[in-house]
Length: 453
Image 1 (cartoon, rainbow, N blue to C red):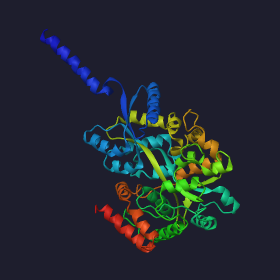
Image 2: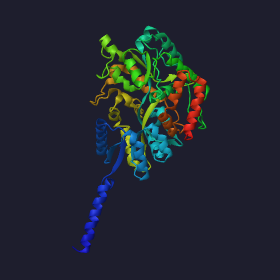
Image 3: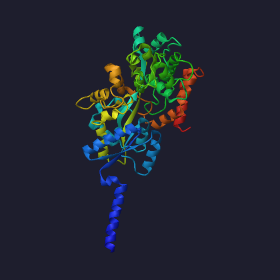
Image 4: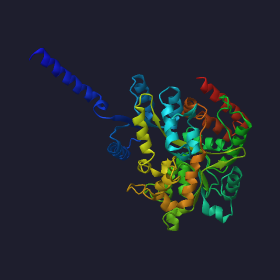
C-alpha cells in the first residue's frame, strides 16, 4: 500500500473516531442534565426528547444526575469546558452558578421575554432576578401549604386561617389534646423541615435575610415578633421534637387541626396510598373524606407582610451551550412538552408557567386534567375541585425564599446545611432564650456563616 492510500485510510479513521467521540459533529445534538433521575421519569424525558428531535431535527441526549452529585458534576464539567447545554436544577444552585459564570443569563432572559414574562408566576421570576434579567428559566415547583380541617372550622364558624390572627384564634378554639392538637408546628432542631416551616412564617411577616444593601439583618422587630408568634403556635403542638413525619401522621389520623406541608401530601389525603391509611376515611366509610374536608392556604399574611415558601426548579442554559438549540429545547419543554413534563409528579410539579399568550390558563387546565395515563391521572381535580386547585396554583405568584433574590444562594446552603436557625429556634421554644435573644443569636450566627466561621 503506497503512502497516499495510507494517508487517506488514516484520515478516514481519524474522522470516524472524531465523530464517535463528538456525536454533535455527526448530528445536531445537545446535552440535557436532569435531576429527575427515577426510571419512569427518565423514560418520559427521553420520550419528550424523541418528539422534539422529530419536530426540529435536534437530538437531545438526556443524562440523569443524582441531585446530591449535581454540584460535583457541574464543577468538574465547568473546569473541563464541557458543561451540558441545559441543566434542570433546584433554585439552591441558580444564583451561585450565575455568579460563577456557569449559567448564561442573557439566553434565559431572552427566552423568558419571548415566551412572555407575564405567563410566568412573578415569585419564581423574582427569586432568580439578576442585573438586566434572569439567571435561568422557571420550570416547575411546589409551594408550601397550610392545611386545615375545613369541617371543624365550619362547625365552629372559624375564619379561614390565612392570617396570623385567624390561625391563632382557630388553634385556641380547636385545641383539645390528646384527641386534637390545635396546630402542629415543626419543632425538631435537626430537621430541614423546621427551617422550611419557620421560614414560611417569618417571610409572612416580611422577615428578610438581608436588607436592600445586602447586609445580613435578622435582629429586627419583625423577627422578634415572628419568634413570639411561633412560640405561641408551638404551645398547641405535641411535646417533643416534631418534624414532617409526625405532622403528616397526626393530620392523616385526625389528631391535628392545622399543619404546614408540601403538596406531596395530596395523594395521601385522598386515600390513594395504601401504605399510608387515612383513618377518617375508614371512620366515615367515605373514600376521600379527609381530602374533601381539608382546606388549603397558600399565602399566609402576617402583621408586616404576606408570603408562601416555595421550592422552584429551573432550566439553566450554560455558558458552553449551543445557545440557539438550547433555547429551542427549553421553549419546547415549556410549550408542547410542558403538560407531559408536569405529569411526572403532578402533586409536586406546579406549572410555574400558567399559560401562553393566547390562553393565560392553558397549562393550569392541562395540569388539572393530566390525561396521560400516568399514576397521577386526575387525582387533583377529582378529589379537590376547582377552588382548591386555584388556591394551590395562585400561590405560585407569592413564592418566596430567604436570600436568593439578594444573591445569597451560597449562604442559604450553609444555613440549611448547619441547621443553625432550627437549633436557635428550639432554644426559644423551650425557654432557654427569649425571642429577643433568639433574634440576636440568629443574626450573629448567620453573619458568622457568611464570613466562613
